[in-house]
Image (cartoon, rainbow, N blue to C red; front, side, top):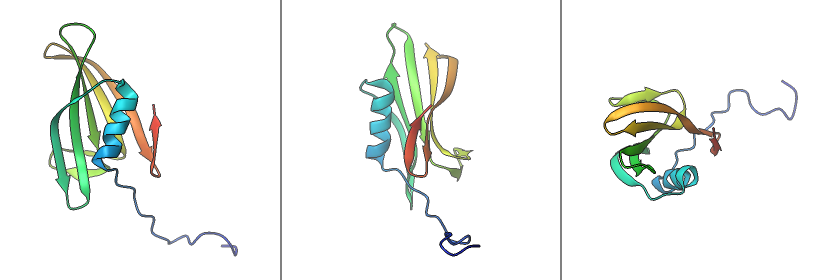
Length: 109
């Protein structure tokens, strides 16, 4: 390593989003009010937050699910992300990754 290079072995602390930060991303993605359906935390903070947002049509619903990077009894994620699943009534019809937290900054996908 050359002088001035960052320490190769330096431990980088992962950014843990706050519930307020996650809600602000939900709002940016949807520009609508959302209803919390599940929120789970551990000693580091929130790791799972699910909300639903009514769609434009009668039976349409979008479910946004935030999960912090890690392995939990509810599932696992290689990155801190928000996924969206679209429903027609009780039937999921499509879904995708909506946003990802990279080095503490959210990227809308």
